[in-house]
Image 1: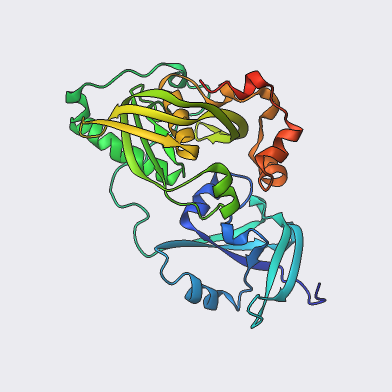
Image 2: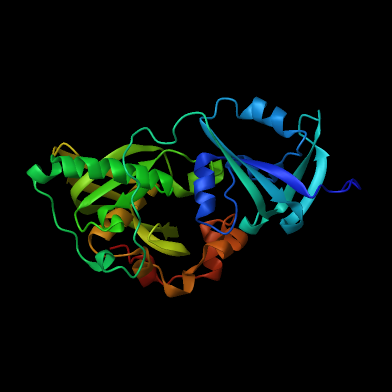
Length: 317
């Protein structure tokens, strides 16, 4: 640890997506590049860092951080290249309360359509406990549903989330949008453990879910309609979904791993089921405690502290 006096403020640069995730949390959501430690810039380093690493980013956010509120060990040391010293935060995190200022830079619009961003209804709203009705072909092709799909797409991205079901925006209809493309907040180890891969944007209407692999896996899940809480949820490892797309054409989706989990979570919404209905009560926790205590643990390490019975492990439907 250097004896240099720590500046009162340091700067942290985030992607726009991670900033949106931060707004829904009590801690700053950092990328997988901050896995070993969280990188910071001093004020006189900021311009060079932006020019070197963020010149092509369509949007980014610069946070002014009060160093007195950081949690962990702040070290002033040479970068791996050895060319210059930077502040690195080890074994810690950035509380939301440490943010003094945030400056968002848009080089282009964060969304590529002019659709309206919708309000996501929260747990306790009756629509989340009401089975959704199917849509007719005429309804699917109507301007109202086509506009709703675009608005749901914008709302999902802004949240940010990887899936959004129509009941979550107050519409009791069997319509889901899904996209899982940005994994910058995850390490390679986490991606492999979760069997998580990129999933381009697509629409599911009137889906029917079929379990193709009776084996289950258990991981933490959260929900845009149940903010600030997570729980361990067992899900089938492999599923098949028969549905219609936004053109009212029949589609068959076969998915495994994290994609299968997303499909099951969103289709649950259409059947008035929330993830908290499937997570054993002993595993429910605040997002803040998840980040502080369990985020870097493997699911096997977590389950040593939250052992699930064989019945709980197979409760995937």
